[in-house]
Image (cartoon, rainbow, N blue to C red; front, side):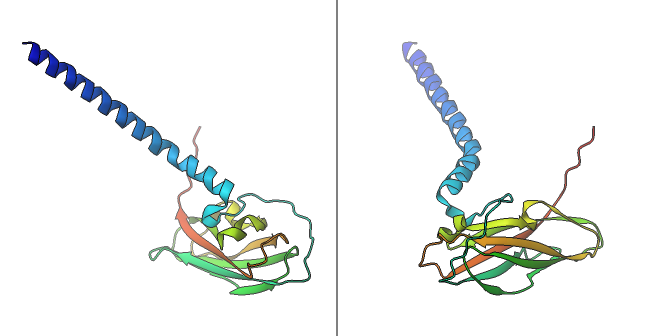
Amino acid sequence: MTAHREDNGSNRSLVLRLMVWVVAMFGFGFLLVPLYDVFCEVTGFGGRTNTESVAVAENPDETRTVRVEFVTILNEYAPWEFSADVPSMEITPGKLYYATYTAKNLTGSDKVAQAVPSVAPVSASKHFKKLECFCFTSQDFAAEEERALPLSFIVDPELPGYVDTITLQYTLFDTVRVSSSN
């Protein structure tokens, strides 16, 4: 009879340890996204740029030029046409520049798009400052609507000297706007 009680005690201990393990793993999974966001913000990893408008004074470095390439990506089944109006431009760090992208809703129904930016190389991401960007907010498109999407930016003159090309990539996603009903 004591062997049976010892088995029950060890089974309870095992079950308790497994339950603690499950709760710990759930907690870790829950915290992983915010921790990754903080990591990316601190290190610049992932090529993320600012997600809000910033005010930056022009302070040009006339001694150098940098090539900025504009790349767009769509999912194979995305209901959009999406492209940069120019494939690239030569810029002077510290000067304000404007670029536009064109997007078209290819469906017969209203759609909401969200653009997600990325900058390469990663070391350039904290030096690429967007003052105005269509990526800051979701974009509402009527059925078959086409329109220009504006971008204004400055590349910080503190950009490392070894960076002579920056690739700005936008991925356009079809999203669903959730309406609140009170």
